[in-house]
Length: 244
Image (cartoon, rainbow, N blue to C red; front, side):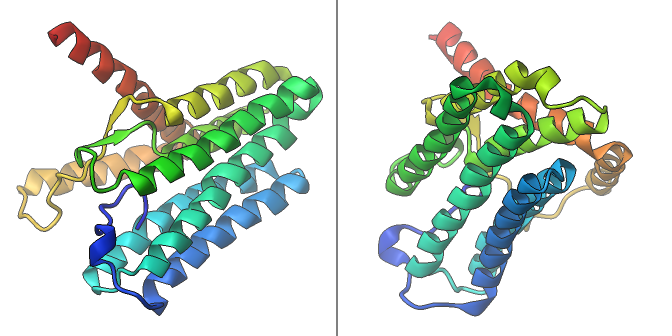
């Protein structure tokens, strides 16, 4: 259903509307809409957190659909439209209201580049789902790009930096995220990880340590993680070319 999940091929999806997975998709859509409203009210920390909540809900709808065998064409299309709002329109408007408004036309240029790139990224993902290597995404996934924007806003706001003081950095990050989404760079999808396979006790302990690490300072840790993920595609591309 979502970009972080393996969706069924188009020919295997069922027609119909199933309540449970679409509840999660609707929740993600609401979180994206809420982020826009909070940005309009200058509550940018709330807006950034709402985008991360949308990510969590978007990551659950596909898994729930597979576990309950309720994948459908309606769910796939609804999920894509929800992603456009939560990970395309919402981040671009949040960063524009927070930092880019004072840059004039350059500000909304950068915001629109990000928004348009999200639409193109989602369209390409929907059309290439049956032909690409499932281990890698082609271009930066839109939820990761949205997390990059939201994480930057959250961290700067937490350090009491005004949007105007980092406006050009915000514009550069928006353009970087947008171009990364429409690029052909490979980003590891984590789809080959078998969550149903038994694991050593140490793995569960490491997961607990990771959660403690994230909770120690969520804005900085989340932004750092997604920045590393955004750069990983470039590192992987360089390593592949060196091997050739």
